[in-house]
Length: 201
Image (cartoon, helix red, strand yellow):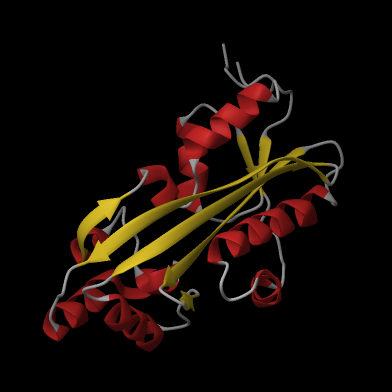
């Protein structure tokens, strides 16, 4: 017997295999349908001084874009923003971009904001954002190049050039925050919202 009470799977408006795996591990059936939105435009609407708000706006835009194509279905959008003081980071385009981001983050504490939005027929069922604070080690240039060699193209798939659940864990000295939030999906608040909405037992 399933804990999921709807006849159709939850639609995930993200191509993140980590988010999908988290949902499926929690017993939520998932249909993946990535959204195509202008991320930089949406981030600009939130303002440079509001990275947490940008994460929520991005998640909501993605969920709405997919919900418009799938009437009646429950859609989850999710996104992350990373901020170091007043500087906001996006996914690096290449190895050089990842190296530049990691040099900027090295030895410092940054904030990682994970926003989620659940939408049905363009009506927002739930929006939320959770924040984690992560401190990178003051690693050497030699270690950094070794890490980039080992991680390969994975450094371009997430903001900050790291994936904490993989080799990126070697970059850190301290982490304060929920592990699911760091991986890009605040799972406990999401499950609470879905339970309150009556779609999980």
